[in-house]
Length: 51
Image (cartoon, rainbow, N blue to C red):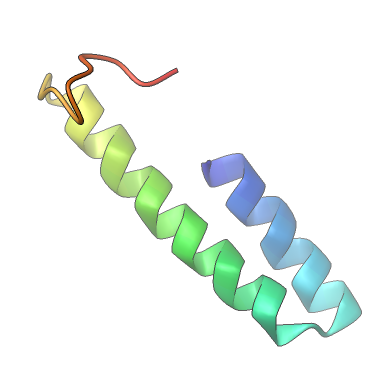
């Protein structure tokens, strides 16, 4: 999810499409939150790990 967010940020920056830039930032934030929660060992949505 973080990688997809970075790709959208780059494409949005190069193509000057602000909606891709915004979606990329949101995906990076959500991916970081899931990664941090997964690293602490908490079950997220009934799953122990997100792959």
